[in-house]
Structures are given as structure tokens and as C-alpha cells.
Length: 86
Image (cartoon, rainbow, N blue to C red; front, side):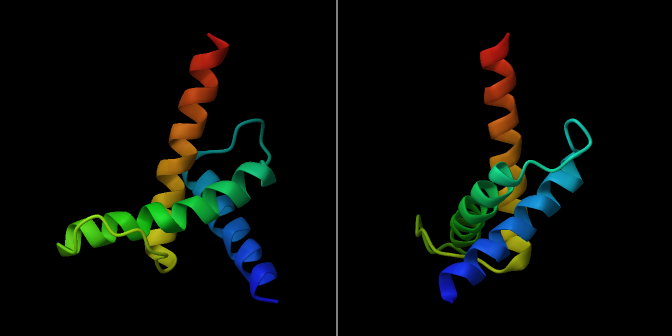
């Protein structure tokens, strides 16, 4: 049940990141949403630990940290995908 909850949380956070950055093709890429949401949680946790002065400590973060991390992951994903097309 925990794994399903984590995947749903990742989907929602990743979808929020895509809505904030703007959707490509007027729809949400759910694969990107899940990956960006889950990875974004850890990126947000890393940023929070660096800001707090705890050093480089990889940990899951809350909703705000997850959304910030998902925005970063989604932006990097789109940048790398667009760069490989050119």
C-alpha cells in the first residue's frame, strides 16, 4: 500500500511541476510526472539539507520540497530531450 501511495504522490507532484512549467502538447506526460515526482522528492531533500547546513544528505522531502525538486528534474529532462533532437 505504501508503494502505491508513493507512486500516486509522485504522479501528483510531477503533474504539478508540468503545470507550473507549462505542458508540451497540451497534455501531461504521466511517465515523466511519476519519475520527476519521485526523483524530485529526493532532489528537494538534498537542497533542503544543503540549505540547512547538514551537508550532502539524500533524503525524501515534504510537498514543497518535492514540487521544487520535480520542477528542477522536469526542466532538466525537457532541456536534455530538446538538446538531443537538435
